[in-house]
Image (cartoon, rainbow, N blue to C red):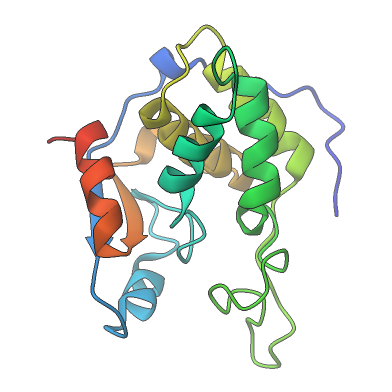
Length: 176
């Protein structure tokens, strides 16, 4: 794993133009992961590969309920890196999406630098109220920055909801 040697400059959440969100949802075994893989890498689509964020909304609700005095950004980031570690390294949650067995020989994976991710997301979230909608967006922004993507070039945020029951809370945060 590489480490950064240069200071990271992080935009604030309010400085990032929010792309419209497109959600992919299905009822199972519909080929959505392969469909999403066709879009992966497009220079104007902001997305995290696979469906490693599938349980983010239920997790967020649990984290909020279990945090006396309210959930802090620091807590949310720490819990996210623990529970959704496959966003940082696709080998962390084996079997979740097959993204730990990529390449011709099945020995490749997807990985970003965790410290850079933590730095980016904390910087993006500074001065923002603790809200799950903001967190979902910030996770995508921090991931993109770790990958070296140009956030200003992103025309759509593609989110693989994966499970139909998760569309309702997502719709609450993104009614449009």
